[in-house]
Picture 1 (cartoon, rainbow, N blue to C red):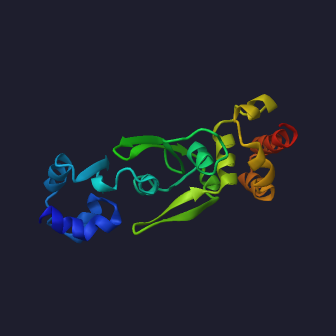
Picture 2 (picture 1 turned 180 degrees about the vertical axis):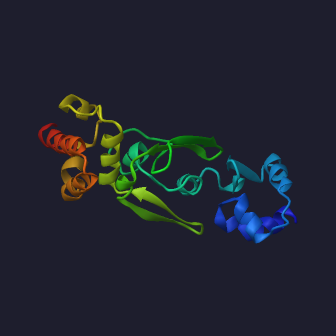
Picture 3 (picture 1 turned 60 degrees about the horizontal axis):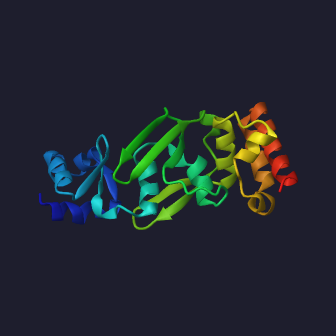
Length: 207
């Protein structure tokens, strides 16, 4: 099989793993991947996962890859907070939440980190389309906040909350307080609920 034949079949997927290729073509020569990576046609994402190199530099493709190469997961934490404009920093590493083990990957498309939450906290995200590949999962802003305070319990004082540098206008005008409170209640974590209440009070009273 030539690379052009392979590309015509799979380029619309964006990224793929060797098991998908074997299901499609049981006799596929896996050494093709090594050769095509060396020639710059493909990029290796992690063990058994590849993407077409010409898709590099597209933020939405990196977000799509983040969820494809490690499941179950969704984008949350600092990357999501930056995406929504809640924190001032531009975050390039794609931060994700998973109910699997904590891990990280670095490849041509970026740096990807995955932090573990208990399965009961694996909720609060929506599908974001990527054409033509499909979609990825992104936390609602309120869930990105909840995940952050769950995974970083040191944010438990007014001073610590202010160090987060959340956008005060967003916290007052855009934050869905009912959704955030419901998410905190759904967590069943009393200490987390208290941190959420402290966060909302902090950004109500401080300019």
